[in-house]
Length: 162
Image (cartoon, rainbow, N blue to C red):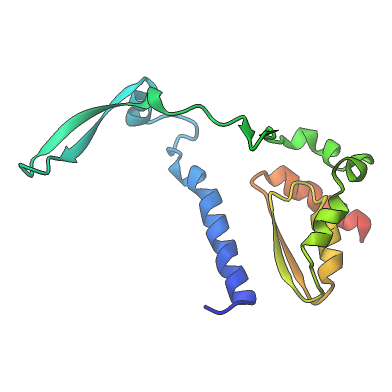
């Protein structure tokens, strides 16, 4: 596969597939847990392994409580908490440019007219809309967010800004 639109579409498909995995993994009852999920949540579960010497399958207990806690820091910086759509107005606050120098970040992307880019985790479009201006009418910005409410707000912001 060569670069350009086909590569972009391929990556977008990969991203969307990855984002849909948690949805596909849910049981038909929504948030109801299956029996095996409930058992795993309680601690120990059984896994089948093949003994290399005898070739027989052995059941081995594994302890899911050994799963490490999620990181709260990386390279000396605190990892940001997830953003709920009800906090979306904070994303477009007037002080954000001064605090984060977001225009410099977008400048470093070196976006040019006609480019195709993806704003993954776009939220309500704080970066999406300036990126769309940078790639112009011949370019495309794919805005992807796991929360439909954020995408709705992005559409409202897009319509408000023309």
